[in-house]
Image 1: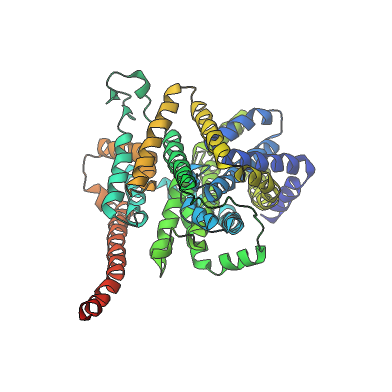
Image 2: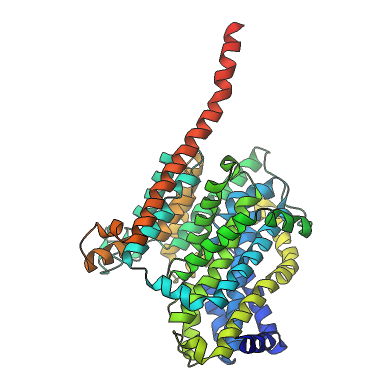
Length: 509
């Protein structure tokens, strides 16, 4: 192993590959930071430029886009409260409050360094156990996938600070939104009311941007009108040594979130949007002070971003070991491999060690390069964030609309953006959490597809409980829900205790 590995490292560090890899990281950072421009779209835009490259050079470039895009999403999530990518949803929960509190540099660099450390940790099993992890992922049937998605949705109990009922209603609205459009299995139109524009359903990216961008920006404008808007971030300087100490001081959270991200990445078609929220939820449930989550603490940022970058390593495992795309980005990369005449599969690592270990080396190098490239681009991004709010809001909304329209060149997507923007704004005003709705839209189709597949394979609903992994995840989902209820009741008792203690004193007077 040492021979091919050292040769691959030397090849990736040569200018022939290192330069396009760094360019890919920069492209991914910019694409990930702009709401509406997904990592997948950025990879697709970069792909044609790699056709004339040799296989390792082209794949290294796309891996750079992939790794850079995951880190780019945290910039707007922390500074504007708008996730640049779906995998940065949970980063907004603590990153944006920390930035509004006057610590934007700390918020951004906590995310960057957590992502780098999580990515490097996840790279170890990527190199050492790719085949083992992929074989374990292939043991998942539709029953296990259904239970996994139910477990992911159960985190609404941890994301709903004020009311568990409101969290469940929000998730239900998201799930119901996925019912509109064509049936995912048979392609039959349902609940479209004869409108052709509704046949394709609601693109989750349009929902994500609409819900978060409108709600966040309209809230900022309202606070500005009342004279209570927070100052725009003026400086992103920070003590990197202090940030690293903060992250390493909660090594348990870092390792747990990395393992969650790695495992979710290994499972085909799940993706980082589930990994970061699930890692955030587990960090909150394991914390001794869960009530502080969402107020701008480092724990939530570390959990979300370390899971994001670890998810990349897991997706690469599935792509290389069995030729199965772990998410939309690796599906594009898989196509690039096939274009270059390479067939990934169980014999890929043994038959093409130079290329396989080159991909490993490119992943590690891109993870490290993220720090250097992002440090250079943050000054440019800070100029954008510091722009006057009355100029910044229309520009962001226009970019969001253009990015949404570019999904499949349909004006209907822009109307979806606008409609869900109003829904998100009203939800925030009435105290409903946004994350369960977005998660419901993302996972709704997958829950339905795997439920149908399971029942078509074996029409026995008891198998969801009888199969060990499926039953375990359903049990964890119930446990997560119960734990969320108990935490909420404990917070309610803490809030009412001072009032009860003060009542006799007030009465004595």
